[in-house]
Every structure is written in structure tokens, then in C-alpha cells.
Image (cartoon, rainbow, N blue to C red; front, side, top):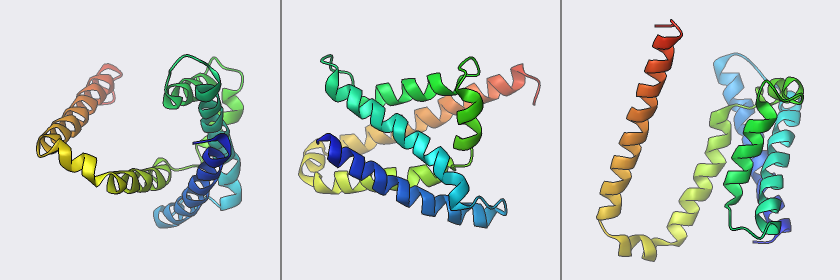
Amino acid sequence: MNLKHSLFVLLITAGITLIGNTVKSLRIGAFVSPIEAIPGLLILLAIAYLGIVLAKVIPVKIPAVAYIVTFGMLFTLPACPLSEFINPLVAKVDFLALCTPILAYAGIYAGSNLETLAKSGWRIVVVSIFVMLGTYLGSALIAQGVLMAIGQI
């Protein structure tokens, strides 16, 4: 996938996310207008595109998602001078609104590779269930521990 194609896909994702963000904010009663959400969405888009570009330019084989997560984390840490600017803007973009187009792409990808999926057989279903269950339980245990440690529960 070339960089223009990646940018095009990111722009489509941003558009779908903007619609989802607006609908979600209407449903929960804390309306965030699309104009308010656009700056945060553009920041997320820039971080994602930066990660994709670095994954293509740097000769070491590191997935783009590693760069994206690293930059996202670094730019939003309280120690980063940019965080005071970035965090309030990105907070206007709902996480679930971001998940919708990403999961749609994952479904399309899985659907286009049904032959490969079929070759994996029933074992992939069992592994997937255990991975999801382990992730959920692990996250719940970590959250429980942190909330108990800070005295929230």
C-alpha cells in the first residue's frame, strides 16, 4: 500500500469516525459538534500517518502500529509540552466512534481472506476465544488492582 492510498484510507476512516462521534454524542446527551471534534481527529490522523510514513521510510521492519502507539503515548504524556494542547482536543473524539471503521476494515479483510481463514480450521476459533477471554480478564484484573490501589473501590 503506497502513502497516498494510506492517506485516503485514513481520511475515509476520519469521516466515518466524525459521523459516529456526532451520533454517539447526541445519544449520550453531551453533544460534541463535528467542528469541535475535527481538530482532535486531525491530530489522530497526523499521528497515524506519521507512523505509516516512518514504517515505510525506516529500513528496520517495525510495524506502523508500533510507531503510532509510541507517538500517541509520547504526545499525550503530561511531561510532553504538547499534551496540554493535544489532550483536550483528542478527548472530544469518542473511542467507540474510532472503533467502528477499524472493525469494519478488519471484517472486510477477514472476508477477503476466507480461504486462508478456512485453512486455519476450527483451532483459530478456540484460540480467538481464549485470547479475547484472557484479554478481558487481564484488563479487568489490572483495572481492579489499580482502582483498589488508588482507593476508588
